[in-house]
Length: 207
Image (tube, rainbow, N blue to C red):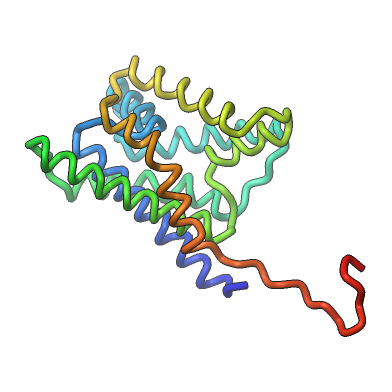
């Protein structure tokens, strides 16, 4: 397996790029991912910045791991700590975008960046993000289908975020439809392979 320092670098690069991708989609102004809608809504109703709201949401989701007996990894903790500040940095650096063609292009760039970032940070195999872990944990604990768990949770946070003033638009739908297939490409590209088991000469398979 790839050395731990390299995997940590891959993890941090993925988390940082994820935040920048989220910032690009926000600046595009055509709708954002469901969890970002929630963070936007919280920021709209409180003195919190988007980045800090993202951190707090991640931490609260992580607390939900305890009753379903999920164990966080270093990647889980860094996910909570890094994505929010990197998204806030991106919002500080990027100007407002105007014009539908330019907005659409910036949104797609952000979406592609998020897909690459997801492949990087999940592929490092240092622990899932708090939201991903919640979904897989509920699946493992109660046997609910992953797609049902994900759809239910994301529909809930989307509705709450929209009611709070988050940005829901055609981009939100595009994210929901495209992020899965895109990550299906990036995850194999950046996934750290587990080492093959050593089989001693003369050892029967499955021994």
